[in-house]
Length: 566
Ligand SMILES: [Zn+2]
Image (cartoon, rainbow, N blue to C red; front, side, top):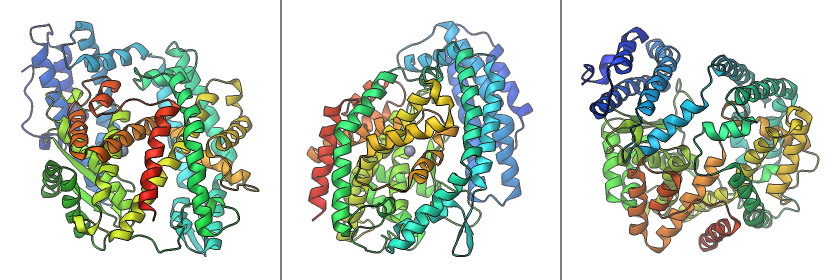
């Protein structure tokens, strides 16, 4: 022990930065050599587990009731005072480990990540990150203030989404156009913020010694196992192997709906005109039935799930005062995950629970690794865990398996999910290709050129199955609605890579479910201790950027769709 640690995260509940700093100082100043490095790492890991658990609990409580001023104060203390400073201290400790040259088995990938972050660090970028963060705040204020008037009521653009599922086509058209309108009206303001972000990002890259921001972003994201060229191959493969399937799916929808032309407001509604799926009436049955659904995938998952239920770590229902969105986080000290959702009784809520449960099971499987730093891989593998669970659990969402739907409804939910997976690749490729282009070309500085490029990419990846004529401004507005361009640049291709991994896990399960789930669990248990291709391999998958690999999986999805769609 290099320092005496508290007994539980409770000790940090009301901590200020002054209470936390001495622990980091002790870890930063104690003698460190090959003889005590393991103890030092264990202490550091344990300390971070206590601190991050206190922060995670504070955030979970606040998100559950944003009107509670005590909870808000704790959230602000952790979010703005403690955690940003802790991040700086962490970099100092990472540098100590890297300098020592200590990288035993199971820690190579951890040290590789630490070393990478140290290499791209530039003191000159610290104030630029603060400027970027201020611009992000400015951007989110502009977006947060966007409102529309819908039937005499003020609404936010996302609140119009349910109307896109209306069986009344006129309602859908009005909702679609109205949702895009504030983005069209505020286009120059939003594009202006983006111009400033773009300029700072270019400077960040130059300070870190990179030719362009794209190269910097790839390195900053610890992408050691695939390159920008692989991303370009991914785009081409989507165009080649996925776009025809997108067009087939949309053409089938058009015929089902008996329409001459499919317009953009026709793609979310049930094509048979049925009312929306309703997986549950009350939150208790939503939670309770999950145990059977996950138990069918693997009996241990039932146990994992029940341990979260028993510890009251599922806050699933939407209610007044709750923060929006959904997420899974881990209590690193107790080694238990929690799930936060805003369920209102729609099919997406069920999808959200299956998805977040995949993250939760990943966290539990990986928690057996001794050090916190070994447990969480990058988002490529993290999303394989969650996206696979959506697919693996989907055969058991029917009432006969203890789930939520009668047989027809279950089929309908599964069809929507599988079609959504195929359609998503077009969007994923558009978002990544747009960023690859804008940060590599001088024209990327020009907002008009960016909009024109987006339109070109949409046609390239989406094809012509939907008639966008007369809706150019609405189509352009789509990229302004995608937060990643503004707040998480280049963070998007991960979803596509992960979905291809998840589809392989699912395809394996069609042949031999037990074996597929066994491999899936083994891969999750490896946490972050192996490079990405090895994690994929352990799960029974490979990294796919090629058209043949994509085509094979898309064909498997279309085969399944034709079985379900009778
Ligand atoms: Zn996720």
